[in-house]
Length: 579
Image 1 (cartoon, one colour):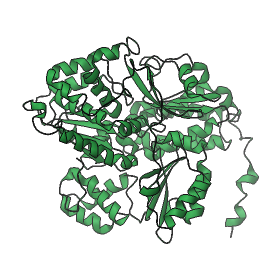
Image 2 (tube, one colour):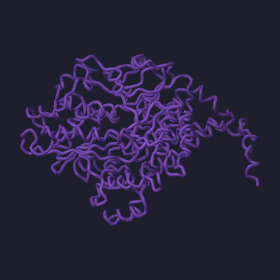
Image 3 (cartoon, helix red, strand yellow):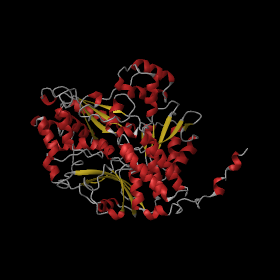
Image 4 (cartoon, one colour):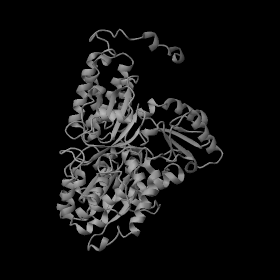
């Protein structure tokens, strides 16, 4: 079960819970709280301040009785973000980044909150509000002013499952009953479970696609214990929401996958690292854990198997995209800044608390549970020989039917676009901003390892969308979400954003494109983690795939004065400041 935040916490691993305790109670973390926590935890106030400042959802100033986070991802921008933002400011009397004078409403922008199929969307005290427009914002704020509670007026979020394969081939969304998978462990040794996972071809489905069976086998081979199983439920890649749907529609399937992993590798504890944006899912996950405990599928000597001991709890994150990287997530769990580690060891060797640890994402654990429940042969009759099984896509943007699609590996882009009712697709973002951009001309490409891999996000933009706006949104996202630990990422993302601003103001030359590619190469080769390595992927691909568009945005003169420079516009505000 999740640990209850308490001011008496003394364990370093409970730092996040302790900080959440103060943030929730006082709507900020006070100087007094920092001093008290520093003494109780035995860490310096400076280090604790560094931890607090690292996370987006911890505030040192009052965040308001009603703390509102409006998603500023690119899909939100294309669906009316600016109008909704203006409406919140008008109705609350606050400006974004501040709290109104009465301390009632705090307005803040935030990155993708996992609701891209219902944009624009916001969280109010971490309760979801979707399909926002000016009238709905007015109604929500009016109700809150009259005494309504966010939890009473928030939206029920549909699973929004749009497509699955026929029943004989479906994996994730076949009918499921809690306790369908774990009892089958009675007939399988741990080694047999790992072999079945390997045979089914299960890979890490968060984007890295490392073979799951190999990872589990590596962890099992480690002689030292205790061992841990961590579920990475920090799906922060813009446009991704498949894990949200799995956790709302069948949380037990994910948890059973973790129990199975624990049995296979010899772990005794499992932790779900849940992104703070999904706080509204916390009760559902804890309820499923309680049910599994009552069914005897958690605890000591599970199913009468001597030595099969396993417990589960949920750890709430605090808003940091980089914590989706497994070693950053481990640091966060240990009560540190969520910065990526220098990779001297794999987590299966030295992971959580320097002990052997399996880290997989939500979709991977759900698939592993189905392997035990349905057998590996069920996977082998779906997808392709090299990529058996199915994959979940989170589809959003300019299409008639945004939502979750369970597709077979090997499905073409063309088939996906047809299924979701894509409207004049032009720029398609696969695997989020850190993935690949493709054009509609690449419709014959297949979604599979070896061609077009997709971690989950599939965003569609029609031919009326401004490509530079899309890329600028990505750049801002990476600059803000960089942990700042390594120079290539910290400086590179800042410089890339300034380059895009220069292009948008029609002050760039062709050489600026060359310099963008050079910076991208430096970042890819020298950044510590995937954020910096992948930050310029889509930008560089777009420069190559949309040459005519980008040629129109720059001055052809490589050395002389930029003929597009508008002197009058540049000095238009001079009179305001000259005195």
